[in-house]
Length: 393
Length: 208
Image 1 (tube, each protein chain N blue to C red):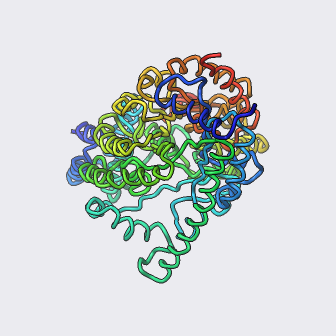
Image 2 (cartoon, each protein chain N blue to C red):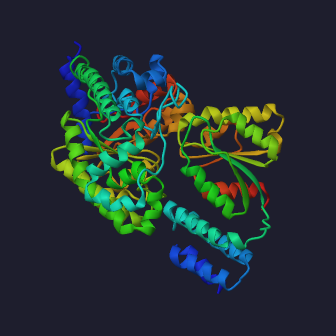
Image 3 (cartoon, rainbow over the protein chains, first blue to last red):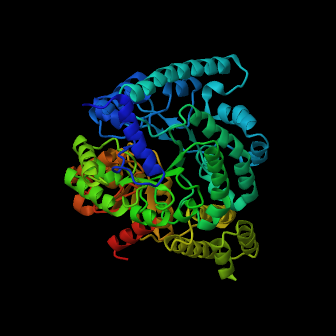
């Protein structure tokens, strides 16, 4: 007899949750992240269509849920509301079909958006600075706060977002209730230093570490409460699922461990703990190689944190943080994009053998499923996980 | 006396390094000498980066200090005779607009005596080939953070073949998502995820 959606949901979610708690489930959960537009690749949509039209994106992800029932969650990474972006005239992202070829994933265009002399103003009242200085600077339509143009820009953006969210919520419910498929992202927040590094000061944050270290620290401290709130609010819509943090600028070679300890870790840890205290799980995408920075992660509460590893040696990660935190990963991006199904299977077998013992291990690509991954490689990942990821028969 | 400036740059003491430079210029010292000292310092900074003692902020900061020193000595500089190991065409490949990795290897290559022709980001394969034809550079380096860069890298290698220049140029691909597989797929000669290793490869190719 086939299982009901509720049973399927419980089975998948339970398997995942058990691994998150660093316990042993029936098999290694398989939760391929899709941070780009592979759902489009699979369903015959361009990246442009997936990014701009939420109904097409939903359609494509629903098809994945139908075609890959062996997955334990669906990841809709394209949670960018491009019509909203467009209404504001934002200039910090390059968009598929507009600034980039229709087949390319959205990309962040890095530049400096805050002058060094604005640090105090930022730390004094971050939200005021963001609304009055940052948005006018990065959004052509909001250049003059209070103007009719800015007003219309905000109205259009709000309307676009309402449409977007209005389409997403029923889709999310359908995925759970009709297909019994959980998601692997609930809400999101950011590391304070990454906020400054990515969007605010850009590369200049690096010279700030030398030229105005105290200001960097103060600015990071100033945004902690807002980032905790952001995680709690966005996570509050779906508290079963983890609050996502994409980490960009803390690991080697972005800073020395001394700088990490001084500038990155304290306010990041405070933010994470603030989100966890509200009852949420958190999940990090640790971009690049976190091999040198792993020890610090052990300071986080056991069973509350999932570490999605990119290029970090996962066996080493298992050794260092595996008793406390659930690790997720990490079939290399080139292997999924350009390798053969046999090689994918070999790799999955290898990491299952080395990482699944004792639980706390989830299968995923190093960067999720890359846009270029051929179907047979994804199938090889699925089959190999079912084959080698069983804990008991 | 000269070594002091080297130390100040290497230890990233910006204000003091600039002050020392001004003092040298005021004392009518040869600006070429200051350039040599700066280059020596940059080499040490690069070595420390390679050894894992320095990270990106240190590279960037050293670059900033160098910029400041150049500003000070520029008016006194008549003609700088620079000897290069060779030309290196560099760019982030079409389909990718990220440039941190590209800028890292640029810094290290220049510190090691290469003349870098930086084509910027989202560089079409045709642009690489055109620049190759114009300059006759012995090395091309293509950088990418995303797997979306693979096809452009492959196409560049193909266009170079079509132009009959494949045996005249060495091709390096670099960035986070690089490995053996990507090298085979694109037809490049070498791959790296580390700027420092990229420089070692390039120097080997130049026989230095």
